[in-house]
View 1 (cartoon, rainbow, N blue to C red):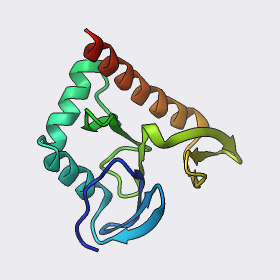
View 2 (spheres, rainbow, N blue to C red):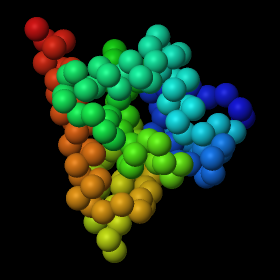
View 3 (spheres, rainbow, N blue to C red):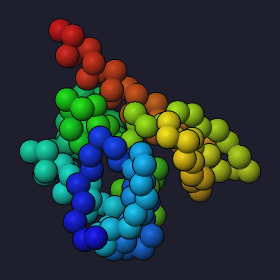
Length: 148
């Protein structure tokens, strides 16, 4: 497959190399011949914005300017966050709403998703926790704005 847009079932985008991504969905795992960043960019465009626009929006709402979580699509609460700098080819993107729990195992972060799947990420628990909390901050701000 060489085209893909993130949808409400997308759990994670895991880079295999510069131009290949393993996509984990709620009930499916497959490979796409695109970089994770290209999938993120195309998905933002598919839902009517650009990655740069979404990134700027996060900065305005939260003050977060690097390794920023982004809103792919607001009405479906599709918020994704990177595990490292998005400029790095090893950056994994995760859906905030699909994460059930996470913990530290052997200096790495072990993430359990709501569908029972799990992955181990080669970043410290502290770094992962920080990224997760940034995404929840963005989600909280959005929810408050919807109420008012």
